[in-house]
Amino acid sequence: MGNSQNEGKKFLDSVHQYFDHAAKFSRLDQGILAQIKACNSVYKVSFPVEVDGKIEVIEGIRVQHSHHKLPSKGGIRYSMQVDEDEVKALATLMTFKCAVVDVPFGGAKGGVKINPRTSSVKMLEKVTRRYAAELIKKNLIGPGIDVPAPDYGTGSREMAWIADTYQAFNYGEISALGCVTGKPVGQGGIRGRAEATGLGIYFGIREALLDTDLLKGLGIEGTTLEGKKIIVQGLGNVGYHAAFFCQKDGAIITGIAEREGGIYNENGIDIQEAFRHRSETGSILDFKDCKNIVNSTDMLEYECDILIPAALENQINEKNAASVKAKIIAEGANGPVTREADDILIKKKVVILPDLYLNAGGVTVSYFEWLKNLSHVRFGRMGKRAEEASYRRLVNAIESSTGKTMTASERAMLTQGSDEIGLVRSGLEDTMINAYHEIRDVMIDKKLPDLRTAAFLTAIEKIGVSYESLGIFP
Image (cartoon, rainbow, N blue to C red; front, side, top):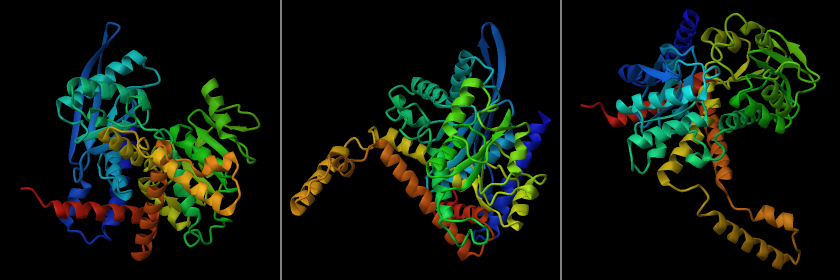
């Protein structure tokens, strides 16, 4: 346990060091900067849960880092390694992440000390509902207060339990479903949420590859993903979808690192088949035509164009950073590169696409889900057919003026209206592209050494504006 506490402290120190470094470039008052950096509230709770005649005491935590905008927002992780510093670091990152992509939330994070892989579904449900009840009792959850989401070890099932518990306590509250995001679609969730973080990573990488000034001298050929070699660490929801969308766009996935080991094939690995193989066998190892790698962290040092660490924090540190051969590190996880490693990599001219920008796709689509819950209507429901009718009129006009007839498939393609998933993906793409250019402009304007400092500074300035316009109460 001591080790995980050290890791949590190291992670929080890293985030604070990144903040302090970026804050040096800010015009804001020192007092405002101190307020932006501090965690506003930390709630720790222990509660008993009885399963099959045995009583266990479970520890839970919820950290609300910033209230400059409400609700605060952040996932809940289930892990035996949950500790206060780690949750504080994640909540802090959430504040800056929301600001970077212009999602009007404060940052928060939660954790419950339980092993989701060895606990029964009955146990998980009891713990989830009791944890939700503890938050409700203290007014720490609600569509206008604090809106949790899934994280490491949790998913849509747990979010549905939380929403149901909240509704039981707030019977008849019309926007109750907005108390949590990442729910199943049938329970007020949104289409496109599952792949949102990975798709956002793909959009971010794609945008960076077009930035020839940034990538000058790295030896990266071409401005598309076509033929780029990628190694991904972590084949969970985030790593899988990031690799899947990159592969779809022509990238070659040469390696996958997981906790039980890794697999490598320089000619490429079919990501869907590898994912299926792991689901069926419980292990990524022994996948066809691949070499097994016993110590999967060694793969962080393999040759590749793009490395996507999408597992846990502190994976690239002062011990292995000098040996990293990737030209671009795309941070799928939160905090996968320590502060010491960051310095080493910047000196090596490695381009790092920072977590607080790159994996913000999840919270962006969570924001869309929250809006959907507050508006009580599915995106596209009212406008889709009207759009299609208008496109049809346009196609008819083109056909009559040219005297040429389109094929049925051409007509279908040109007259398709926007449905929920199309709108969600378009909103996510727009968000990731705009945020990239905003960060890049700040980097150039302030002559900053790297994108992470630029992203932190962008966020700090936006949050500062909120605090300045709110004034200090009383």
